[in-house]
Image (cartoon, rainbow over all chains, first blue to last red; front, side):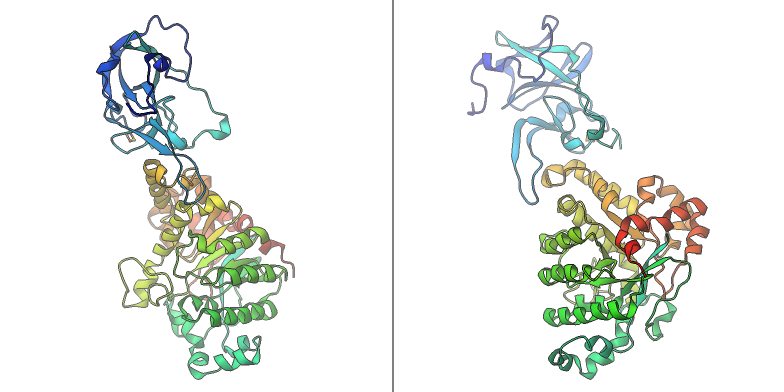
Length: 160
Length: 337
Ligand code: FES
């Protein structure tokens, strides 16, 4: 286990950013120990396909359909990304918090489902996860995204 | 106000330029190979059947309120091996333009030396203070325009509010030192002329992806004489690649088309290429795209007149394109007779 990986199950609780309400209706996904690092597992949650993954940054669940042209995100790759920087400088960050689409490589945040850098208007569904007693549970409801201020919204629509 | 952003002007005798240099530099240039080359600068590239004509010494196309004068002979320094001589020559050319061509309605550009950004920045500041110049002409030297080599020029442009005009000199794709064309060296001037739009696409892409437009948001660029029908597809392509490979250019903080649609303009010559088969109506579908195109006659070579713009684009879009130059060239508007 790498240093940046959460070392206890307690640390893994609430890996998602948005504290949701009750976790009672969360659905069972699998045992935590059965999850292979950075490998998605496709599960049906609330009648929808959801992609669940354990990464260096935690356990995350996203909707399976890319908002660009509907590639299956369970085939996506777990990455970090380069943060906005000055010319010719690279700042690698968010390791294990980014998924890239298998078709055209667009980046999305595993935490929020948002397109990185505002490349796309559409976003992935993001679902709250809870790790309880060694098992992984997923919310059947999408995390409601925070609406950006109008001026900050990206110009491109999904599918463009 | 109608601004013609692409009016060519030339000297018939290089001694008129040399008169502004000190005696030693005059003697350096006063040799028959150089003095005899005065007509060559118009001939590197064949843009019209007027190829063999004498170069014209003054601008005279009706219908435009203001005319930006482009001395294409000065642009050819991008093919010179001697960069120091090039700065002397340009200094003389800029002085001549100030004294002989500037008339309030006829507004010359400051021509700078792409191989010497330090000298160029100083020349921009010096000439801007003379209040007769309307823009900066940056010939296409060896490096793409997005590289930091040109930063001093862009800083001076931002500081003075002068737009940067990029116009080929005709030696591109031919002389070492000037930018090459894709694939290799073409045998004929005709081939080079046909392919000049490659240079505009290449340099706009460089400005966007190197983060230069992001770093200098106040600098405005006009790519002059390269045509414009290719712009929508270029913007689609650069955005498409950025969405996939944004992490390779994290200094590009928005879709690259957003920068181009704010900081880059193209002028209308040759107008026909974009209006055949209804291409204009089909591809220039947004106000943002239509706002990028400004009128440039390319006169006295085979040029378009403002009336052609109206005739080919229709009264609404034609009027819009004829008025777009004011946003690009506020300093041209500000020059008074
Ligand atoms: S389908 Fe996902 S990026 Fe195109």
